[in-house]
Image 1 (cartoon, helix red, strand yellow):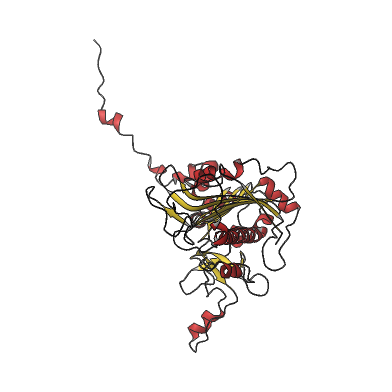
Image 2: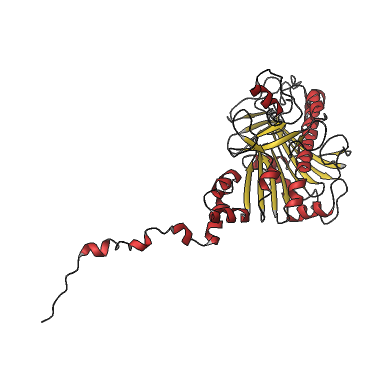
Length: 400
């Protein structure tokens, strides 16, 4: 006669308690370094990684090995503006702090395009390293709450170069400015993307005088481009043959596009100039992106372009701290009224594709439209693809 052994069903459901000797073990210590690095790479944000460093000695030794880093710039600091004098000791201490004056990186709007262009071409420039060099300069800064020099808000500011100096194996770096450099009127669309090696490889600019989110919206009584009255009695009918109307040349439309183009190129070349110390110090980089929180401009460099800059130093503009823009060939497409599939309508939509005049045969040719039709995220990528199907206008620009 067989006997059945009784077993407690709870023993099969609940695990046995761990021995008392295991209660003091930190199970995070059991994770391999490769898994922790995978987590750190998913985090990316340099401030969050800085907090991870203070958790333990092990984390402190692993964070410098992170390959994917994102730096969000909090503000732009002017290092030549002096604080107003005060009799109080606290005011005196504040005036001695070079980081006490914060200057937002904002250029003039396009209400007066030529005035804005003059501001862009002025001597005042932004630098990644605060206090670097003589004369008037500003610094892009990342705020933290560690010890050191603090502004009146109790936040320490460091340049991205300083923040990244302890990272040894960065492969993918993304730097995000607090806002775009180019001020625009409300409703105006202006986006650009530029690729650089030692100099400009290509640049794509997409602009529109207004963006309407209702496909049934009527064209303004002031004409297609929003500048002056149309001479066409059938102003509500869009001429879709791809040609630029005569009023585009007389009502300020062409002048505005020139301002957009030059301003975007100046912004891109200034960003490129600022990246030199980071590129020189981090030779493991495979990809470098400098963008802004507004999504206005995007500067990209791949491994080949980064290496080109290290081997062939850039040509700097003598008038300002930016990379010299070479002589350019440009193609322009224009649509007075461009309706996208999702119902968004762009008025005065303009696409400008730019390449240096002297380009080697190994580089992409202007006839290959893939590099500029895929430069923007949706719905603006679709807008670019629609514009390149229209009539093409060729322009040239001298180096500046």
